[in-house]
Image 1 (tube, rainbow, N blue to C red):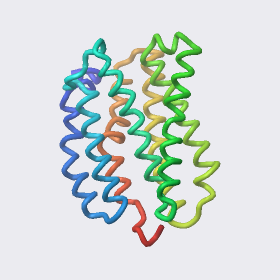
Image 2 (image 1 turned 45 degrees about the vertical axis):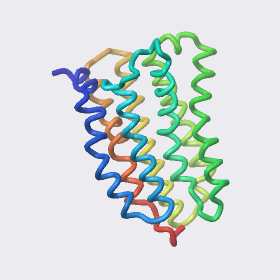
Image 3 (image 1 turned 90 degrees about the vertical axis):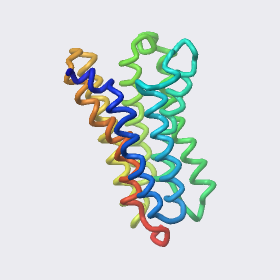
Length: 217
């Protein structure tokens, strides 16, 4: 079995995400307040993402338009869960959620602009992935250096941990896509499975483990 066939196997997605879901929900139910809701909502959504955008998807036919819709929607949701968790401030709930939504739209809009300006990006799906990954890394660095680094105490530690996790995830994706674009080596698919596991399986329980308790925020 090649890494490509393994990465495209339903045993990986949605299999791993579905196996992890009961554990994720159990982690969420052990929390209180906002992060209980966050864990339940995004734990369920990431399992839904793994189904609707994976090999078992009932809407995999791109001609229907639904595959594109769910693909774009779940990319946005995947980044949104990071910004919602990292930006959460119980004392300014509405403002923190609004800011998270705004931040989550930057990379999708910028990548669409790049696709419109450079036709070769739109014509090559792997290049589209790479451009998005690089844009998000720039957005993440700008957010951390311009905002999160100025926080103090538990909130800064939490934001730093989340930023490091997402930076590693996106850097691994980008590295794998560079390898695939440059050589088409099967190893690139193997490398890509590592950030997929971070994204679909580990991120939500990681956040639930390291998030400060309500009284610490």
